Amino acid sequence: MVVSYPQTSLENDAYKIALEQYDRAVAHANLDDNLVEYMRYPRREFIVNFPVRRDDGRVEMFTGYRVHHSTVMGPSKGGLRYSTAVTLDEVRALAMWMTWKCALVNIPYGGAKGGVVVDPKTLSLGELERLTRRYASELIPLMSPMMDVPAPDMGTNPQVMAWIMDTYSMNIGYSVPAVVTGKPLAIGGSEGRTEATGRGVVVCMLAALKYHGITRTEGVRVIVQGFGNVGSNAAAYAHELGFKVVGVSDVEGGLYNPNGLDIPALLTHQKAVGRIAGFPQAEVVTNDELLTLPCDVLIPAAMEGMIHAGNAEKIQARFIIEGANGPTTPEADDILNDRGVYIVPDILANSGGVIVSYFEWVQDLQAFFWGKSAVFENLERILTAAYQTTKQTAEQLHLDMRTAAHVTAIQRVANALATRGIYP
View 1 (cartoon, rainbow, N blue to C red):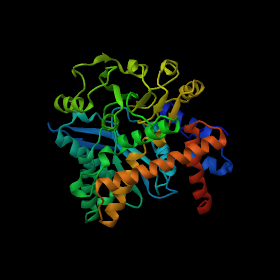
View 2 (tube, rainbow, N blue to C red; view 1 turned 30 degrees about the horizontal axis):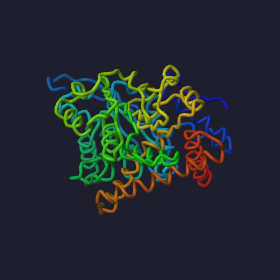
View 3 (cartoon, rainbow, N blue to C red; view 1 turned 120 degrees about the vertical axis):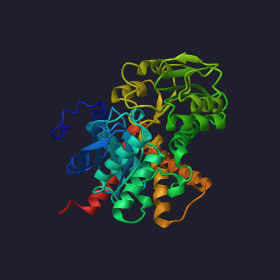
View 4 (tube, rainbow, N blue to C red; view 1 turned 60 degrees about the vertical axis):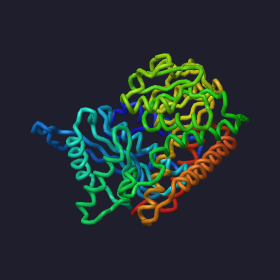
């Protein structure tokens, strides 16, 4: 079947990758061709151009997107990112990955994603609030706790979610905490949400190491590319468990110490100066160099497409646990699989965030809140079960873990779609 999408050139690599991964997976699933075609397309796409008044009185126009890939399993769910790199094709890819991610971990959501083309660092706090509230106002026809539930992503945070929740509530006429997740605790957020994605990456790393007979943590060298919310929390939890985190990086570059970095001290340094640069007792390296340095486990937790055909041969890690969405291209997958590198794919490894977002949504709907220990216990339970299911599929069908994860997820969505039927 020809991969196509109406009115797009598929120039964005992330979307090409998402479609190629989809086609690779459905080739191993016994699915009706009509269902295969149906699931390839987003259900709806929303583009808005809206004004924001800057602090000096100027009015500037911004472009925002929201894509619902699927609502077959339940409300669409996915983050909102503020970045100059946001494109419609990128959002399409991320929404599709969210559908498979939610299905893989068996939570009742479909996939969505959204974003605004903006560098949030160029906005004052007041400008950021005005942009967020205006964008949220434009999304109100699409949002509700039973229709579409946004969450934080790159360039957004709990405060942005609070403004969106308040804007929606003011328009509806009463407080609706469940309309977004990733909120501050004071207005219905969940314990453990900030740490969830990074912690989940390490839970999957533990499962992969255990499967391969590695039960110790001491001496296992870990490199984390990306030191935002996901990467920093993954590094912190790995360090806490006794792993040797030998390298990390942010957008400006990386740090490497073969004897291990003091992650708590690095986090203190980052909080004080806003970057990891300048941290002592570490060698300065580039982001590209960091990926190919000696380690046992590599956690790419930055952007999509960071591991590609140009660097896959140079990667020395035995395990790759994907903290970012789409960090490995299909060409790199082929090279790494041929070399015997074991990859735990993004839709499994970084699903901790959406799992705890689901917990937050449930808590808001019930107005009954859990402690952090209960959140982490249930997070580990769901992730471990998803890992085991994916591993079983991989063994039964003789597939790599990424294809097995996609086959498992796509089959679940297809089963739900077949059961519901095609309307009308």
